[in-house]
Amino acid sequence: MEIRLGSLVRDAREAAGTVIVIDVFRAFTTAAIAFSNGATEITLVAEAEDALALHRSGVGDVLMGEVDGKRPPGFDYGNSPYEISGVDLTGKSLVQSTRAGTVGVAAAFDSAQAQTIYLGSLVVAEATVQAVLRDNPDLVTIVAMGDQGVVRADEDEHCGIYLRNLLEGRRPDPDALRRLIMAGGATQKFFDDSQPQYHPQDVELALQVNKYPYAMKVSRVDGRPVARKVELA
Image 1 (spheres, rainbow, N blue to C red):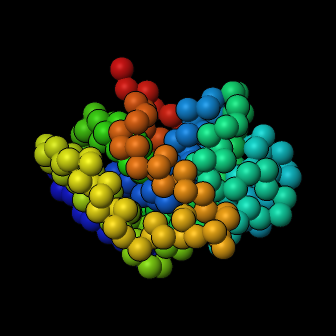
Image 2: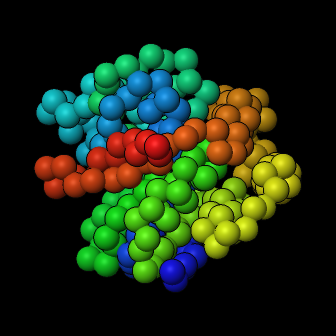
C-alpha cells in the first residue's frame, strides 16, 4: 500500500485512490458527534450559500456549518462539536458546510483520481484506518485541510501523520499527540473570550482520540457527496 500525505485544497484536488480528508478543528469532529447523536447521513457542501439553497430545496433536516468560525444566517447550528453534542439528531439527515473540511471533500469528490473518500479526524482515527485496511487499496492519500484550506494547521498535520503510522502498523502515543496539538497555535482561539464562536470544549472533544468505533465514508447521492457511518463489526 502506497501512502501519500498532502495538505490543503491544492492537494485535495489531486488526491487519488482512497482519500482521507482531515478536519480536526472542527468539521469532522462535529460530523462524528452528529452521527453519534443519531444522524443518518451528512451531505457535504463547499459553500454556505449553496448549502442553504440545497436545504431550502428540501435536502436535509438540519443545516450546520460556519463561515469564519460563525454560524451563517439561516443555519440551524454552527460548526461546533460542543454545540452539536447536546442535540438529539435521531433519524435526521444533515447538510454541512465549512471553510476547510467540506471544501476538501468537494475538491476530492470532483477529482477523477479519487476512488473512495473518508472523513478524517482524531475521534475516528482508528476506525477510519480499519475501514481503509478492510478495503485494501493500493493507494491512500491523506489530506490535512488546515485553516480555511489554505494554511497548514498543526492538528490536521499531526492527525495525518498519526493515520499514516496506524496504517503502517505503528501505535503512536495519543497523549503525546494531544500535547503536541495543545502546544500549537490553532488552539489559542478556543480560549479567547473575544471569539465566543470557538468553545474551549471543542478542543477537549476533538482530542478524544479514537473515541468512536465507526468511520465516515462518502458516497455519491444525486451527484452530491454524502457521508454515512461505517460500523466496524
